[in-house]
Image (cartoon, rainbow over all chains, first blue to last red; front, side, top):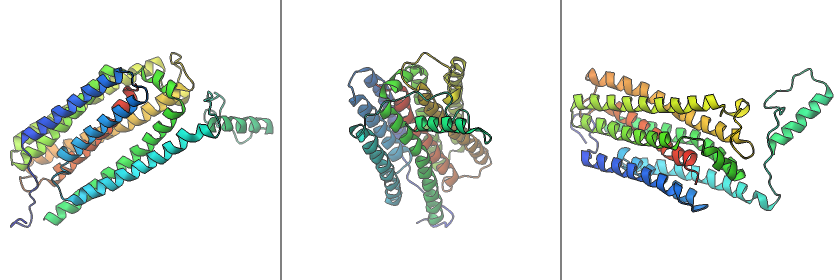
Length: 140
Length: 198
């Protein structure tokens, strides 16, 4: 606690820390570009995301001072990141396993699809049917 | 007071996390379309300029270092250094946006535009415009955040110059730094996802 009630003194990191972390971030950037040129199949994406997460962690811990601040901030941040993780994991569980139920084949979105030319209110029944069929194609 | 500082900082963190959720939705959209059509994503990402993308990553990381150092020097009460470093951050942000403009204008000329505006024919695969829709949406939203950050940093330069901050009161500066680091973190993920599809 400070004697002067209008003040706050936070953690002061030495300049060295900021420069070292910055250098580490630049090295990680060079590394992720290099790794992407090596053929690793699905592991390319894993490696890229692992390096990106390491960089984000460095920024959060040292630049955003999560490491030195009250642990309350770290708890709040982790809870949000975990929730985002749930969102991504459950989405992937759906999309990756969908092919087991019915085979997915990507189809070109037709130029006359509803998103490109919204159905006019005074169209005839035939035009409505086409629009409905096109919406079906978009959903696929 | 410590309590005021903590309340302000927690509020900023909650804002930052809501921003994370905003981008999170786009990351989920990206995940879905990349899993559905990995080959198209691979082909389309080759149209992006890796050199400019890598350069922009380095620029944004450097700008994060300069704003962190700006706050560091305000903690030590060295106002002039803070102002110089804030100007460096602003300059780096402007260079980032200029490079982004070069990339965008090149794609505009080629017709690599989102959705129905897509006229380019050089990408093999189904619905390559989906990749460019996601590319423009994610980088565009990120660029808007850069512009917002630049406005706030300009205000901070003004306030610092007017002696609004000291070594014991610099909360607005600290919160600006937090926001700028968030913008950096988002780009750290956007870069490999868009430019480095193995």
